[in-house]
Image (tube, rainbow, N blue to C red; front, side, top):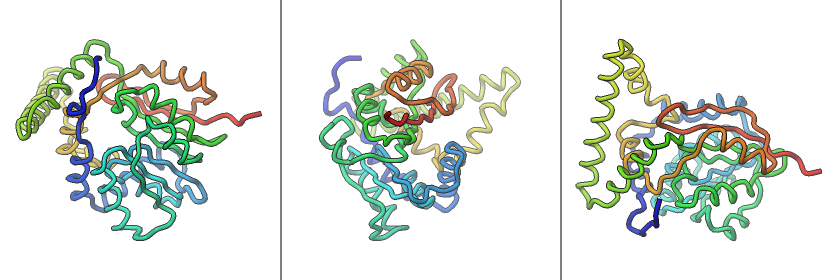
Length: 275
């Protein structure tokens, strides 16, 4: 996709700092339910949990509420601030929730983190500019018999390349033109989707996800539009490629949800014990 200039990287952290002002008990409960449902367990007591690219800190909070000893890190200083605000609001001075700044591409930093029972990387590794290296480094943090959760954008072929250019343009525009561009296109595509499914006599397929948006990891559409339109670097992979890649590195496939259009594949793996 070409080289990445320093000013072409989207500021995820600024968006997360804005988002945490909207966090309420319902969003927290929905984020926790998301982990419970996908992991098929309702508690993580005695487990270590690594949140790779913690963003808002909401997933880290959910894991901590499930009893895990949590380590959160992010490359973006604003994301670190957001995660720290969430921790201090709910687990002030908690020694079982550590936060640090660092890059998943920095192997020395990654090695310093140690090994974890549960490693969680939601929608992060495809925004590093070196997705496969980021995946390799993340795999190194999973303990034997540990769980690895990954969410990676679906490879839609030409459509994915189209979105790459949309995102690159967003990051080339000065503020506030980038926000006008992002919200304008974001809501236009939402409206086009509603019209499409209305013509197909299936309007609920487009409308229901918007009505129930808050239930999806506790997110909100306002912040997610900017996150999506601006999210750059931007890489992607097929569901099958991800599964084969992990299997070749000693990880067994447990379960997954395959994205069929926009969005992320969500896959859960378990690292095999070494003999």
